[in-house]
Image: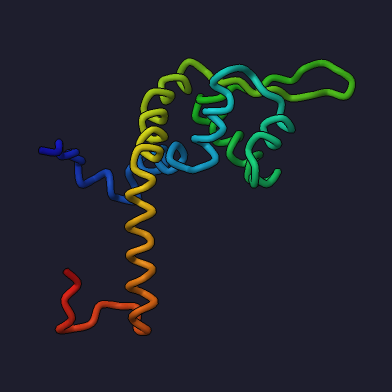
Length: 139
């Protein structure tokens, strides 16, 4: 039997403050940035190289949001040229366990998700309409 997650209906409201925080934390770059920073502080360019596919703009915006939310600290390193280093905060570390569990879920169920995707794609290619047809069973 599966446990049911009970959410207060207000959480789905666009006015709910938890919604914007959840949006930030659940963002793919945020989760990856926090994972990268989990072992040690990183400079911006090293993070950008480790996070294949992230643009400079997307990484900058993500780090700014994480810093604003208290999940990451930004520190200017006095070198020539000046460098900026980012480090996960104690608050940010509290996300490691739930994000780690979510990542493990993706590894554990990737094969099932791939099978579901293939089945969906096959149904879509068999049906030029691509939608639900009245009278057609989708057992």
